[in-house]
Image (tube, rainbow, N blue to C red; front, side):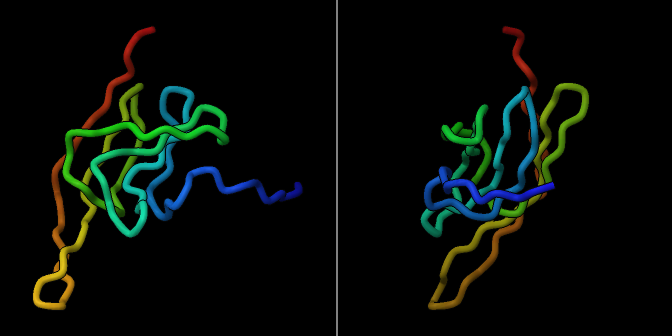
Length: 102
């Protein structure tokens, strides 16, 4: 085996939970520009990424898995600064994304 460094093509994103779903790599809960968004980064080739909006609240560090052609996401957190101190907001909801027939 041999590792090669590839160019960073996700832009200013870090973290997130990677999962393969619908023959694409999904990065769910990634931090972009020090902000979490209700969206995922998705690529079919590792070079071209797009942002897919989602109906759930912004969050980082969610649990993500695929089971029977369905992507599931739960948990995660984000923070707000109140009086100079970060306060974490945790989520315990569960969301699913089902594969659409093409």
